[in-house]
Length: 251
Image 1 (cartoon, rainbow, N blue to C red):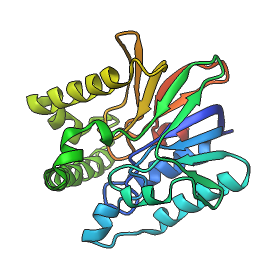
Image 2: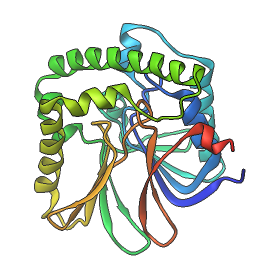
Image 3: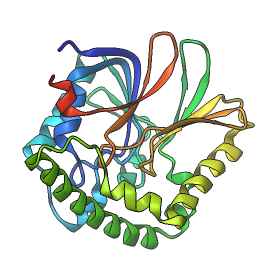
């Protein structure tokens, strides 16, 4: 299978170094997708998880090596840290292995549209002002993801092809979680819509989306924990949300 080639790819919330990371699917995605520019939009390495328990598999090493190899081979890679890897923000404008660290960036599509690229925790009141509460929530989320892993094993054992995510199901059945996502989206849009931008591309909340809000394009990359999603820019400037399925890529 030849790799798909895009002008730009955005991925976020990989959570490498945690048990949440779907490293096999992520490696498959990196293998089969190439781009002129690659944005790593935060929560790439999960230092929160690593501070609690050292978890670093061979596949996690391979992910880092594959990303560095892309940079060496000419892909422009920009790393925009999030709240789980916020210590990397201390190295703004540093270059590590041909990867540039930036707090945020303005990306201009081939058609001239301007997008702010940012992780997004800056617009999350809980993450900004109540970090301890965010970390408690992260523990609960870890439990959901652990249950989700057992569900994936069960699906494989019994040949169930459904992409149902237990964590996503619970999240979207909880009224407060649904309201949080809506508030988050509206906060970003209302903050940025008068900043000479056509839209924003972010991550953080693990809910992939491309939608227009008040003539402003809101784009969320999703994650490689639950949904295994990415945003891509085609060579005609069109943005697309893709959901990567390892099994489908092997067919």
